[in-house]
Image (cartoon, rainbow, N blue to C red; front, top):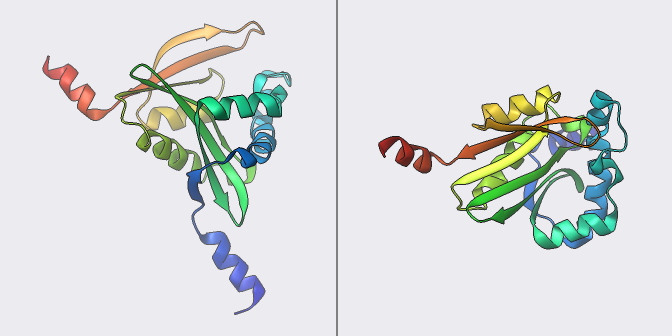
Length: 173
């Protein structure tokens, strides 16, 4: 098999989703900065928190959250973070390398982080203008429940998802 054929076969594999290590956080921060460029363009604001976050800040998040990574050919191409408050899992910074967006990896990462937690409720937020993100979250079962505007004037929508068992129990009562 030629190197080109072997590389094509390797590229066709699904990225492997596993727990991130603290040593991955610098690479995840670089990926985050690449992935959030499109959000900055939408809002005309390149000072949004994902672009200005420092390595120390992302390591602090790592120490308080579960962080998953998606790896393809030895490179981190996606990541997601989550932490628990009460009965709610707060999902944050679902990021996919720009060259890998639109291929289902975001959906896979979202499903993987949900599987890691037994809680009945998941919550996340995104900018109201982020149509691709909203489409992903809504097709994954998330529904809007609150809107707010930050100090820079960017409008956000908070979405939630109840596990099926919880939704059924609520319908019965």
